[in-house]
Image (cartoon, rainbow, N blue to C red; front, side):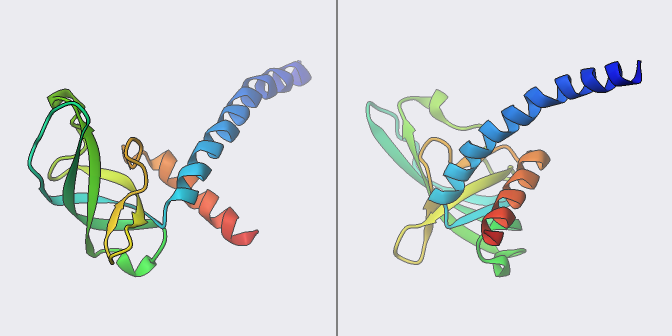
Amino acid sequence: MKMLTSAVALALLLPSVVIADDSDDTLKFYLEKSDLVVLGTIIELWGIPMHGKGVVQPWTYEFRVTDVLKGDNDLKGKAIKFDIPRFMKDEKDVDPLLKKGSECIVFLKDSGDSSWETADIWFGVHYPSPTMVESIKRLVRDDQNE
């Protein structure tokens, strides 16, 4: 009976391991595109809402960094500014996380002029899932140990 219980537990665990590996590939891809990945809170935002076919609307955000997941650890506790270019066709294209006081994870790249912007127009901002934070830290740590 004990062996059967172990076999069932292993069978239930294996699919989740495979799913985690597939998801790790996605996180690795975004980590490779990013120079800085931080968890924090939006303090302020500036932008002019514009909607229309093919409009990429840049918004500038001031962000309080609570944790550095990848990049310069000296930024922890500090405020940084970055741009989030967003495709805006209509008001439904506004990401609900992108508001003052919102906590989120952002994947950023150096925009070349001492400023930051999201590393991906579609997937640069994420809900601050503690499990995702742990996974990002693990992947960054694993990458540094290779």
